[in-house]
Length: 218
Image (cartoon, rainbow, N blue to C red):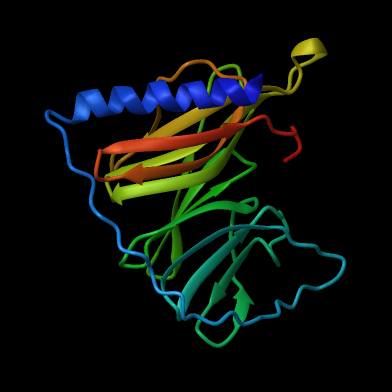
């Protein structure tokens, strides 16, 4: 039931964006098949016991500049960087780098699954954090970004109302937008699911968001 609701939301939400953002039809761009002559290799990440690690998100500007975020809160395994030779854990001031977005100038955005914060890294330094607050919900989790420009970034995830009784652990899907100065919640239908993916199709100027029923501890 929850999964069906998520699919219906995707259709209605993206259709509305299409009608408001496009004045005429656009012919889809013909996409040629990509190369298939690549070779898979294997890397090893040194993780100190008793830590474990669950991969979450890859971003990168080149084969020598890759970032990996995880679902794990330990500062030793939450965020990793690859320089073309080896992977190293990188200091992250937040609680698990569950969502990443990287611009061409290496400005890195990171969302978290705890602490209600979104972080920004510029010139190798974590420069700013943005506090997220939603009335009636104590915990806000961010699980994906898409940024067309530095003043036009979307984030998706879910909010949790811990509370007491039957309403404890209640979920609410969320979409946020950054305008270059602040993050604001986008007005969307009230869905008791979590959003974990957002993608953008420039040919039809439309965002697609995937949602699912999630375990509250995720």
